[in-house]
Image (tube, rainbow, N blue to C red; front, side):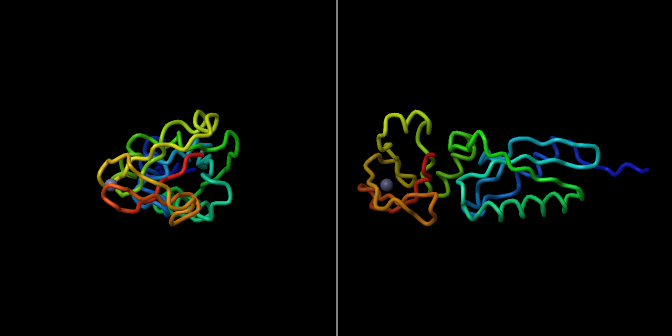
Length: 165
Ligand SMILES: [Zn+2]
């Protein structure tokens, strides 16, 4: 049997780092922190991923994107495995992912999800346009259920805030 030329695990991470979140098309699935594990089982690649918000309609779409990217990269045999525990939190978004969210005009999640829910406080969300901390929440839901709509009281720009969970 001729062993096909398959990319290394690092190569697979690089491929997945080019698969973007359909809801925030500047942040990759790797930066989002939903890829939990990659493993070669001989010729088969097993991808373990934890969906972001449960019931987020984007999950099925993301899985399709991941499969397509890997197939195009010459990995025909891919097994996707969903891991639901521990649940994804916004803490898993990487530093570069947070910076890209800000550049895109979405305020990245503030602080640690676990710490905040204990305190039950509203976070101070800085405006991604001007950096002002004088902002107010306009609506619990922004452009998608995963985001809240905020408005900056200094520059008056509305913006999406990536909600902490
Ligand atoms: Zn502002």
